[in-house]
Every structure is written in C-alpha cells, then in structure tokens.
Length: 263
Image (cartoon, rainbow, N blue to C red; front, side):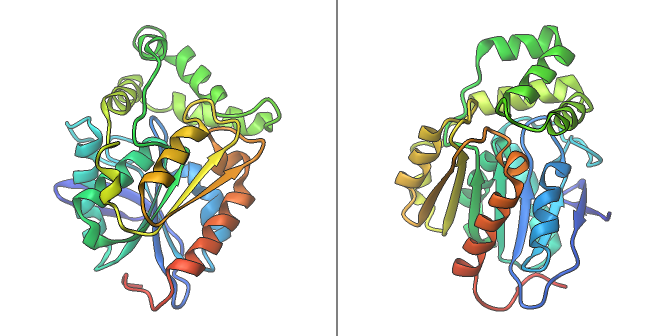
C-alpha cells in the first residue's frame, strides 16, 4: 500500500501488480468514501489492467487539502497521475469521483485515454435535507445516505460495510463533499470531451438516476451507456461482477496497445 507525494499532497493508494500489455486504470471513489469501494473491480480486472485505487485527498489515509470543490479535487489529482508515470490513463469514477474524472478530462485530456463514469452526472444536485442532516445529525445521516445507495434486495453485509466506511469519514469532510457536488455543473462543457467513455448506471439508482447518465451519453460523442437492471447507486458493489465485466470488455475494445504507465 504505497504513498505518493505529488503537487504537495501525499496520496495513499493500492495498486495491483501490472498485467503484461495492459492499460492503466485509476478508480476514484465518491463522496465521503475511500478506495475500498473498488476492491471488487481490482480483484476482477487485475489480470487485464494495471489497476490503481487512490484515496482522494482528505479521505482515507491520504493527506488533506484545503480546497473543497470538484475542480480543486481534479487539480490535486493531476500531479498524482503525472507521478504515476507518463500515462495515458483511464479514469473511472463513482458519483463524486465521476464528477472529478470529468473535470480532470476537461483540464488535462492529454493525460487520459478514456473515462468510465459510474452512477454520476454532469450535475449532482443534493437534497437540502441531506445537507442539513449532515450538518446537524451527521452519523445518522451518513447511515441513511449509505442505505440509499442500495436496493431492498441488496445483501445486508454490503450495506453495513458501506455504512461503516462512510461513518469512518469525518462528518465535516462528507458534508464538504456533498456541498461540492451540489455546486458542480459541467452540463455546458462535457460535449468537448472526445475520449472514449463508458457510462454505467443502475436502473434503480435513486441518487443519480438513469436520466443523468443518459444525458452524459447523449452529450459526449464517443460515449456508450449501459443500464444495469435491478441495482442502485452503489452499482460497483451491488453488481460487482457485472460492472467488472462491462469495464473489462470496454477496455479490450477501446484501449488496445502496449501499456504506457511504468511497471
């Protein structure tokens, strides 16, 4: 579990041993979470890609940053990518992580070879009652947010693990993340992204509904939309195998060629 200091910020991350002739894919977690949400994808894809899972700044074991907007997260991420190697990289992001991936693609498209956007959108409105609950009753609200990411059919152990991870993040950081999401809006800009993009969403996502993902796919010229039936917002956990299969197939179709990141 190495650390990498880049741009004045120490990032904690985990990385699978590289597969020969494989693309490099960096997975970004969402608001109030950490790298562990993507462990299922690391296990499934490590034979097909160089998989890197960082804790975003101010999350997990990474160093904190004073900034608290989506753009500031993206600007902090760029030196981390440069520190990993010459690239290019596929950026995969869930929810807020997807917003950061989109912002990074607009900021430094030269570093990237594609995007995987999971349960996200070009606009991420947050209900006022969630923001107020995170301010006044953070532990209870963090639990409610975690539960809302799954359908009623989800394994209770998945939900408990997600609640534990969210409650383990300082309440002020989770609130800051949700405020950053609420202030974010790239609807007028995403049409400039010409990278290949895979957009994944659960049909029962109550936090970033299918229409948000459909908007992304409609506006970006090289985007493919996949709706996974019967799962919610935490699609990479609730439908881990299906999400990994979709990402693996998309990587094989769009990321052919020798790896560029150092091994």
